[in-house]
Amino acid sequence: MRRRTGFTATALAAGLGATLGAAWGCRPRRVPAPPPPPRLRLVAVGDILMHQDVKAAAEHAAQGFPSLWADLVPLFQGADLAFGNLETPVAPTTGRPGIPFQFNAPVTLPAALRASGFTVLATANNHAFDQGPKGVRETLDRLRAEHLVAVGSGEDRPRAEALQVVERQGLKVAFLGFTDLFNVDLNRKATEPWVRPLDLEPALAAVREARSRADLVVVSVHWGNEYQRQPTKRQRDIARKMVEAGCDLLLGHHPHVLQPAEIVEAGGRKALVAYSLGNFISNQDRMYRADLFPVAGGDSRDGAALQAVFEQRQGTDGRPHLALTETSFEPLWTENNWGSPAAQREIRVIRVAAAEARVRAEVEALSASQEGQRAPGHRTALLAKQEYLRTLILRRRRIAETLGEPFVR
Image 1: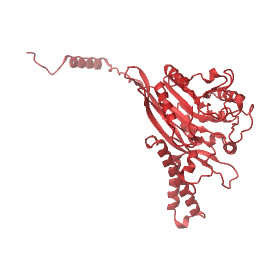
Image 2: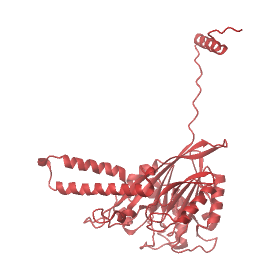
Image 3: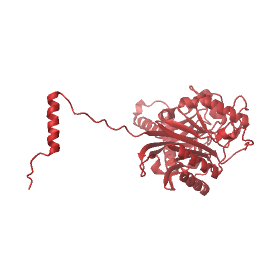
Image 4: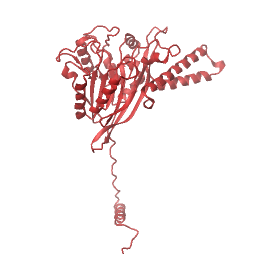
C-alpha cells in the first residue's frame, strides 16, 4: 500500500520551477489571450428618394444633402458597411431634370452619400431606367468615382449580374441585387445597360454561388406592394428559398412603408429577413399631422436603421462560419415643414429615441418654469412641444408594432 504525501510530482515540479525562477530573477511566461473572433457590423436603411422638395431642402441646407440626415452620419460612419436603396438615377449630363415619378439626382449626391458613410447602394429598382440606358451608365460612373459599390445594375448584363464582394475585417461579404418591378423595362441586349430582374431560379443559383465564395451573403430585393404593411405569401416563399440557397441577410424595399422583420429558418439555415425598410428620405406624407390624421397617415415618413452584427463562430462541422449575434432596428422619422410659413423647405431624418428624450426634457423645463419667468408665447411653445412629443411617441410605437417589438430598440 502506497502512502500518500502532501505533494504530487506535478506540485513538486511547479514549486521547484518557481524557486529556481525566483533565484534566477525569471518570471513565469504569460500565455497571450487568443484574439477576439472577427466581427462585422452592417447598417441598412431603405429608399433614398429624390423628390423635388428633398433636393430643394438640400440646396438650402448648410452642408447640402448630409445635413438632411446628419443625425445618422455617426451611425453610418461607425459601421463596417452601410447600405441604402438608391431609388434614383444620378444622370445630370445624359438625363433630363427630374419630374414627379421620374427621378434624377444632382451631381452632388454620390459624394454626399460617401461622405455620410454609405458604402453599398442598391441600384436595381423600378426607377433605375428613369433616365434611360444612358442614365444607368452615367449613374454607375458617378458612383464608382466615389468608391460606392452598386449592386443590381451594370453597363451590360454580365456586369449587372457580377457578384460584388467587399472585404471588411478580413471577411468577404457578397452582395446581390434584384428588382421584381419596373416602371419601364429597358433591358434589351446583354451588351447594353442592364438592371437585374428577380427571375427566381437564376437568382437562387446566384445566391448559391455567392455562398461558395463569401463568408456572408447579403441579398437586396426591390419588391412588394406599395403602402402595404405586410409582405405577400409569394415574398415569404421567395425569402425562404433565398435563405435555403445561402442568404444570410435579405434587405427588402419598395413599399415606401415599413414591413415586419423576422428570422427565417430553411434548409438547416437561419437568416434575417427585412421585408421592407421603408423610406429613408422622401417628401411623402408631407401633410401628416398627428393631431389631424390617423396614425397610418404618417407611415411613409417612418423609417428604420437596421443594425446587424455578425461574428465568426465554430460550426458543428468544425468549420468557422459567421453567425448573426445582434439585431436591432432604430426608429427613424422624417421631419417635414411643408405648409409652414417658412420660406425654405426643410426635410430631415431624425433618430426618434434621441429626439423624444430631447423634446421630453424641453417640455419638462417649460412646465417647471415659474410664472413670473415665463416669456411671451410660453404657452404656445409648450403646447407645440407637447404635440411634437406625442407625435414621436406615436411613431415609435407604430414602428415597433410593424417591425416587431423584439427587434426595436
